[in-house]
Image (cartoon, rainbow, N blue to C red; front, top):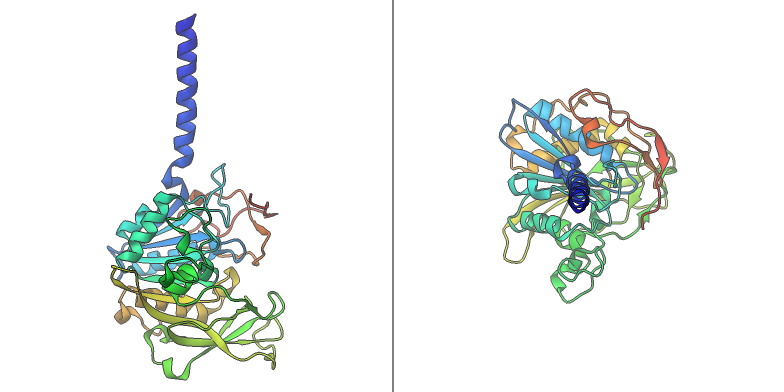
Length: 350
């Protein structure tokens, strides 16, 4: 009888361990798109998607497919998941950032994350080696880390003893942290105007007629401003300009450097919501920015193919609504829908 009980106990422990290991499997957090021809063959781009509102879980795989299918990159999108293995926007349950060790470019759409020590170490290592970055919107306030002295300096409003990190990752690495909204979401869209002095910059090669649906942000970045945003009184490209709003920076570049680390390139835009990608001009700017970050300016052609790969039907950005019950594996391949599932109200995280 004792032997039977011991066997049953051992079996129970094994099943629990197996389930736990399956849930913790980093591969469950990833979807990989691998191209086979073009200037990106042999190079790796890692996309990290976990923001609460602007549907980065949709825009990043769409960009990853373009860079993989049309230009040959191996693109890995890493997601935050819930306890059932479904994509959970805004969660800090991200695993598998060891892929950054071999990444040639990191693309971020994050907000208020607090990763585990292991995952933060991979992120930190990438920055120390000066890996290039392309960052969207809420990535200026990518981290909110409390009760963790080792990593709290990444927090968006950090005011601690590491004075170089005042206002965290956004300010120190990207050149700006979260300040405020500048205009009203869902009521005011934005026209993006290229700075006259930057029209010949490689990132702006072939870019025209940029208009985005996400509202503006207040930003005075430390870096070279490539474009500014004109807030419009309406949600169409021909809406009139808001006469009370001045033009503020919405896209910039800079070199960053961690203490004791190498210099790296960073491109940041305060836009990038899922529906913003529908604009050809904005999407071209982002594709160009990725090539620029990689040091492949020669690959930037004004007529590069930036068409979506497979069906892209973005969800209107919303703080509480997202496409639920979707696993990263559901987005595999060139032809899967971005984004499947039904919109549900997001439960408030504890």
